[in-house]
Length: 383
Ligand SMILES: *Cc1c(COP(=O)(O)O)cnc(C)c1O
Image 1: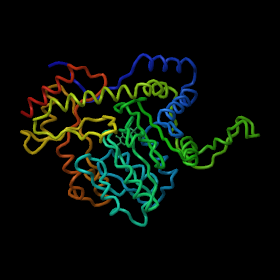
Image 2: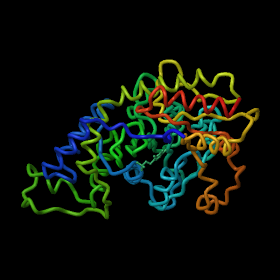
Image 3: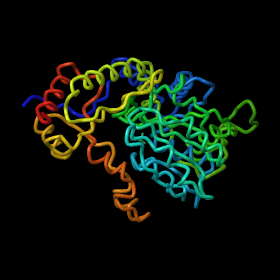
């Protein structure tokens, strides 16, 4: 048996390694000049005048963003059940209740047409998740949100970079957009995340709450007459700041984000061509003019496939190939199931998606030989 091919691997170059060494030698280990530079670079990357607030995970960023837009006890937040638990758990941190909506069976994104029926007088916000890196229908979601006076915070953990309607995810007129730099994501800082927003009040609140609720104004040596050791705590904040070690990775990963996306798209096209004719549905493409981030390549086995999904993953593992499943829908997990008394059939499209979906290895360090190996295994198992 040849070496095991994992489902994902980070792509760290000499520039990242040297930047980390530079930080280690500088003495700045925690939040400092590298984090500031990463935030500036990220804001420039997204464009459209956004501010960027670096944090130690997307989970932290989603928590801060929802707190900043005013989600509190008893508030309802509409999101998809077809996501990672982080998207919903942050609502519970704030004493709110996530309200799940089923997915579009083609894109696996939240079904825009079913959002309105989930709105109640307690609804405060909508959290769309751009599944696999394909944008949700932001125009229609923003229209519903506007009509009902709801906030919109995007979970863009998969969507760096994704273009929709000629503009990057992160520049649409939502309240905030949150990215993840977890080790398997399209760019990585090991652990890390970024909040972007065009609203200065939201940005200020996220910055304050990211570090113990300490007011930055108190630190501002131009406006403050207080001594340099003085600070003011204005809220019970969190410890969510990004370290300069992580930012050192991010600065260089960000420069490669478009190149990485191009590689992922090319590899997805190779998979698409190789699997035509097999009993599978290929992942949906971005509409003309838009781009897909291709964080994940999710194949769907049809009823005609000779094996079911679980057996397929076992057979791939026997051939030394790691696969994954995105996602186990939240309503199947004991906590969410029991809290809201949800049957598996409560979200039939998510349930069906879960039963037939398998994420194949897709990462920029994969060689053509690696990909040929995956293709041969998939054809062998499904023919
Ligand atoms: C990875 C992921 C997150 C959480 O990101 P972290 O940086 O690990 O906190 C949130 N939402 C989705 C959809 C994800 O895939």
